[in-house]
Image (cartoon, rainbow, N blue to C red; front, side):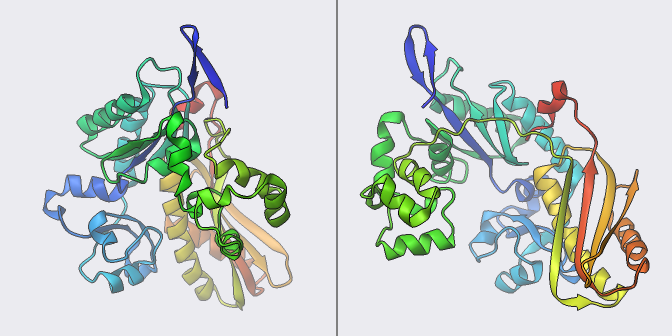
Length: 357
């Protein structure tokens, strides 16, 4: 593990995982006090085959969750109040939060609009009180709550941030890691998916402590190269550094269909769904970036493809529909895949960190 020399003694890494509580929904409730205590979701409308970008904890009690189709969310919670996204407001709040975080450290790795890792190893304050100070500063300026996990690495900090949600924090100190990991469910480890979990069940392993019984060679034999990571991760060892994202050049989403689409109307119906997904991804991952182009990609049943794009257009559904019609008219062949996306303006290296979080 990387260490830092501080006044003649060794100081372990100190990582904070910060997570805003139901970010979009919390903003809507803050701006509309009459919604307080009611189930609220933010996202696409039911008649547009939309999906929820997020929802508050009152809605989650009914089994509603982010990325759920709106019609399904309303089936589970008929009283759910579904509000349209307000990207300009979310961008403004994110900019405020971004500014607060950079007052404490310049080493920030965003995971989405409302979630980030902070490396505060070089900060003179103890990480636990520092996390509380950061969360308090965010609340004072935005009236929005956040949760935090504090640990010696990203793995521990991420897991810890889930323990006292919402509006809380939990710290695991370096010497507490072995005890913390012992009874932790293995599914909490990053990289454990359904396939890996089934293999672990076959080994009668449910906790990290039980997984620690296996040697490196034994884990490699079962999980391949991932077994090397598992040996460390189940012990709370994670050497991944906190590093700012390199700005991506584009963002897109696409779908391959089990049955080819033969009419423009069928394609438009699928386009509407893909547009909602794209806008949710754009708001979550790249809300502060300026788009320069939008595009629609089609792959036909003979595996040929074409792309229609335009510069200078905002990502609006009507513009994507126009590009779809243009691309479809080029051949009229049955369509097996539709993709929609945006391209971003280039970000200069010296200002790249201003686009984070």
